[in-house]
Image 1: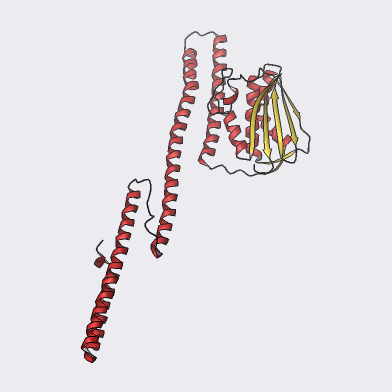
Image 2: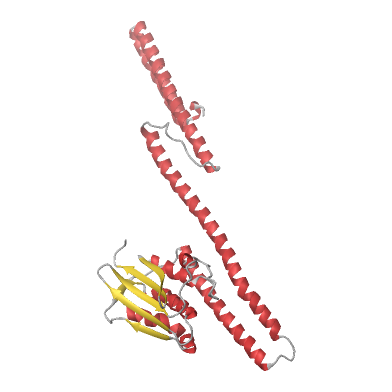
Amino acid sequence: MDVMTNPEVKRNTIVHITAVLIFSAAAAYINIIAGALCLAMGIILLTVYLLTEKTRHDKISHLCNEIDRILTGGEQIKLDDFSEGDLSILQSEIRKLTIRLSGQNTMLRSDKILMKDSMADISHQLRTPFTTMNLVLSMLAKPNLPRQETARYVRELSKLLSRTDWLIDDMLKLSQFDAGVVKLERKICGVREIILSSAEPIEIPLELKGIELSIDIPENTCAEIDFKWTSEAVGNIIKNCMEHTPENGIIKVKAEENPLYTEIIISDSGNGIAPKDLPHIFERFYKTSETNGYGIGLALAQRILKSQDGIIEAENSDSGAVFRLKIYKTAV
């Protein structure tokens, strides 16, 4: 960068030269030696000023080049050479801006990868039930199909549609959490009311399988939670227990409260969780060998609990699977 291209430097130089000439002429009028000394001192000061400005402009030019490098894809900015006055302040501010832009860029890349993976997972998960439904529809299209076979295929199609609806609903809710648009409204709620609300959508399937839902929760047991989303989480767990509980079985729900947390314990009378599946039971789209589900309900339940300073754990007992939900009264 040419220092004389700076209008401020150019103006100051002209003013300085004019002042030196005037004072030198005035001094020479009095004494020729004084005039020469005044002129020499003015030239020296002007030279120092121009050299200082040139050094400053060279550093600013270097700083501009560093910024251009960052804007064109550079990963780091080196600003350690600037340690004086205004340049030091400018260095600090640009460093802050660079760190912020770098963080935002990393987040955008992560979001892009997450969206790509989520779309691939959703596509894969929906392809399976839709393929099966197409097969069932092709069977229903056969001429002279016995009424008994027709009724069986219709039941199977209805079951697939119900599962697909549940899958899409859960995936949409998970995507809301991924996008960060879910706003939880935590307030003191009765745990018994949450359990009753969560079990309402699956009352008919429970009745059809003859499964008893036993709720043993004191009336005054409370937790500071979002009622709607916690009901969703508990409902997914109860649904999971229902799918693994044989006909005429039982699902038990208990709750305990202490000064640290409120714990909800949900257990079933099924065969429990296979040891190889237990570490992965809350992973998104993980399917165990004993279920026809799509591995998303428990992942959603865990996400909801974590968003409320809670945890969810699964284990086996002598009589089936046990899920423990702990909702802490303060963040831990």
